[in-house]
View 1 (cartoon, each protein chain N blue to C red):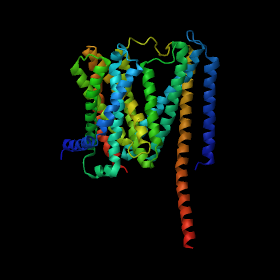
View 2 (view 1 turned 90 degrees about the vertical axis):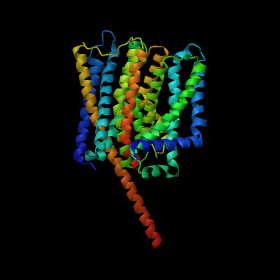
View 3 (view 1 turned 60 degrees about the vertical axis):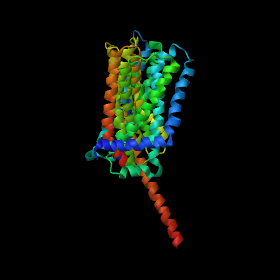
View 4 (view 1 turned 120 degrees about the vertical axis):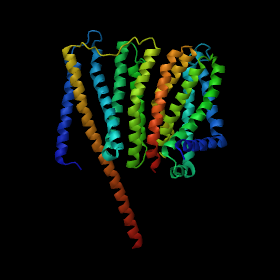
Length: 224
Length: 245
């Protein structure tokens, strides 16, 4: 089996679990939506400050929901010795990493579409520079999902896993948070040229984390 | 177990560090003149600059020790302990730097905090290694902890320049220039320069001292675990013998 087929197998498994258990759909997605609503309360539903802050608020909501998705992705491996099964499966560790990251990224894309619609409707944002928005979102989401997958496996089996992962992930994804918010803000302002450096940063970050994660995942998965 | 000679050497080293820090305090608080613009507030910089220097040094050591642990040929438990000890010192000194910087910023800039690139990335650095320390504290066997922490240490190490770059861009591309420039005056009075250099040297020695003590503590902790295990086994054997008798 090739690397990509193995990765697709793992991603398919994770997404199938999510489709059947509906945790992502029934819990993580509504969580993201309620965060978007909460921000309106925090900013007093101001029609000028909400659209201005929309890019940052959108990505904060995505980030918070991503923490849940990461946690979920590794809690499904804890039950019934699933992690041992994964380890014994003979699949390439790097492929397992890519597969799990792809599954998280897919869930996040779905979430971003819904939250994006919510932000447009609720905050009164006018969409501009759609191409830049999509490229930035893809790069940011890959970076988020890959970072989350690395830290997710890093904390597997530890007693304080659920509280540890957010503390590890949030500072590490500062470049994603900044890059995505700034790229979105520039694109929505109609300044696509200002957005490109950020998009490049996001792409570079994602490439680095995916490469690093693919290498580090084997040793991390191996241990008891 | 440390011998008496080592204990004596440590004592003298500790005394030297104390004297060096005392001289630094004397120069910083008494001998060096107040700054023309900042007045006495400038004295805080003799603490601020050395602490961040030590913090950078400490995180650098953590990164290098993590790499040395990860390379199979150089893998030794000591590298893991060194990485952890250094990160602890680094986090504390970063914390001190942030607090002292804020206190200095209030009278100088008129505010405790500006979202300047350097300040922001230092704050992120603080949280990055705080997470690393939290990871170290979750119970696991030494080997397992070593692997997780070495990789986490390496990620943090590699992430710092990217964080710094992104925050710098954030400031230069987006905001209308920070009014305040936290750069040190390059043209400083002779005794001020000396005080600064001396403080940096004294704090570097202090770092080495703290590291030695922390590593010694880590060894004792490991020894304690072994002793407890031995005691538990002995106790178990005793109970079993009593039952068989």
